[in-house]
Image 1: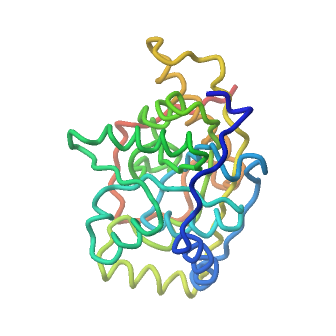
Image 2: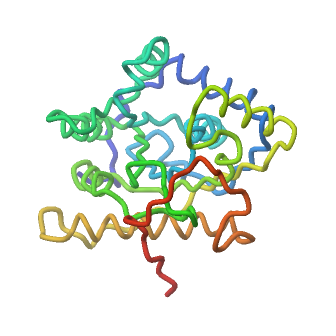
Length: 261
C-alpha cells in the first residue's frame, strides 16, 4: 500500500465516540491536569495511521480519549473482548466503532485483519504494543508483542508513538471498587499532572514483511520510539516513579533494555 496516496476515508467516527472525547475532556480536570504535547501530522489525522501507546493504568483509556480529542484525531481502539461483553460498556464500545480483541482464543488473529482492513479504508487505529499494563517497577515500556508491527506490515500505515504519564496516580492497578473510590478521591484532592505526548513517526520502511525477524525488529523500533517519547515527559523521574502503586505486582520477565545510543 502506498501511504503517500492514502485512500479516501470511508469510515467516519460515530457521534458516540466524538461525544465521549468531548466528555472526557470535560471530566478529566476533576481528577488531574491534562497536558498534551506534540501532534499527529495533519495529513495523518484521518488515517491511514497506527497510534502505539504505552499502558500504565486502567485509567489510560480515559486519558487517551481526552488526549486524542485535543489532538484532533478519533482512533478506533483495539480493546480486550471483556469490555465488549460488559453490560453498558460493551454497548458503548460497539457504538464507538472500536475493535474487539478476544485474547487467548482461536479467533484472536481475526482482530488484526479487521484492524488492517479498517486502516486501508482510511481509519486511525490505536494499539497497546506491550499487550498489557506494564509490571516493570520502573514503569518504562516492556518488551512488545509483535501485533503492532504485523498490523503496520499488513496495512502499510505509518506508526506514531503516544506516550502517557500520570494516569497511574488516579486509578490503581487492582481496580476494586474501594481502590477506585480511594484513588479517585486522592486524585480529586491532589489533581496530578497527566502528560500525553505524540511522538515522531517511526521509520519501518527498510523492513520487509515476511523476512525472518522483521516483525521483531519492527517491534523493537516501536518500543524504542515509545520509550524515547515517554522520556520527554518524565525527565525528572528517569529511574523509578515517585508515586508507587502498592497494588501493582512486580514482573521483570518482560523488562526491555532501553537503548541509549
